[in-house]
Amino acid sequence: MARTATILTIDDERAIREIIVAYLEDSGFQVIQAQNGREGIELCRSTQPDLVLCDLRMPEMDGLEVLTAMTREFPEIPIIVVSGAGVIGDAIEALKMGAWDYVTKPIEDMAVLEHAMEQALERAQLLRENREYREHLEAANAQLKQSLRQLEEDEEAGRRIQFRLLPQSNQVYGQFCFDRQLLTSLYLSGDFVDYFTIDSQHLGFYMADVSGHGVSSAFVTVLLRSYVKSCLERFWQAGDATILNPPEMLKILNKEVFQGRLGKYLTMFYGVIDQTQNSLRYSNGGQFPFPILADDSGPAYLESKGLPVGLFEFADYHDETRQLPENFVLLLISDGILEVLPDANLQQKLDSLLSSASSVTHTEINIDSLTRQLELDQASTLPDDITILLIKRQT
Image (cartoon, one colour):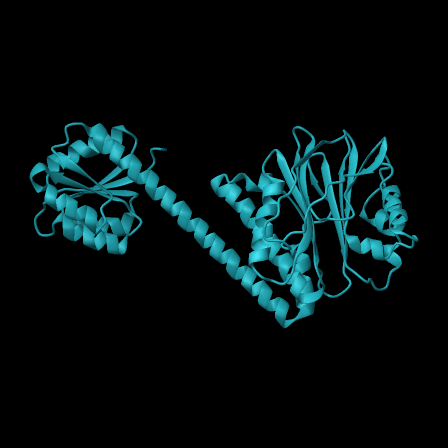
């Protein structure tokens, strides 16, 4: 632990205070002194120390009275009581009243006191971090609820909110470029796409298509993004590696959506790119058409079947890994595209999609050129939402 903590020691015996102060200052702590309980409480109010050492037997205001006042006014500041060998009963009472630990006098080994302080400071820091994390989540949930209320009140406002949740287009992470396009059949979309940095080595992304259209389907996309973001927060805050595990992510999402009884399910492809290894780990929850991976040798579908998310209570998802080419294009398009392609049958439509990503060396391949090639820029209305996610790596 970094020795920057401020310690308040309260003891009516000057000699004991000076021994404690000398030892703790040599150990790197900042120490302030109070010779009685009332002075200690006033110093606590003015300096907000990180930890308090308090004697139990003092004139005018004893340690138990000090403890009562401080635990009420400063519940997050750890207090260690210092008691004589003959007042152990009072020390036990102090622990019941909120003291964090106790040390008996005379203190024969100051390292014992220092160890108790280190443990109390570490515990206080963890409690403070947990409180801040809970407050952050509560604020995020409040913001989400507000977003949902706005969606209900005004679909046009809801469209603006939903599109603000989308990631920035043409986003570059190292040698990887992510771009997206979302074309809606109504004001609100049941499709959603996102990509983000997980840590210095990994990038995460997903595409989802919620069953149905309109407000109710858009609600699910907002909830989906909120859940994925909370998984990302848990990784950052507590090291929970679920966000790096595509099949586990889909499995947990499946449980959340099914048990939420939203009357909806979704297809979803979730992937994690390892930038160091240039590899892709992914899992497919019923997403079709399959993603297309194209390099200089040509395009091919990443065929990987899986059950939709939220349709069945118990569903397992496959863990797939693919070494990525040096230069490549990874193209994901939601199934709304199949309703607008002019080809006569499904196979011809799938072949058309392959040709759209036929050359990774063509530097002009981007969302706009794909939209023009698929003639989506000429459609005045769409029978279904269409989402495009384009990932490129060019060295």
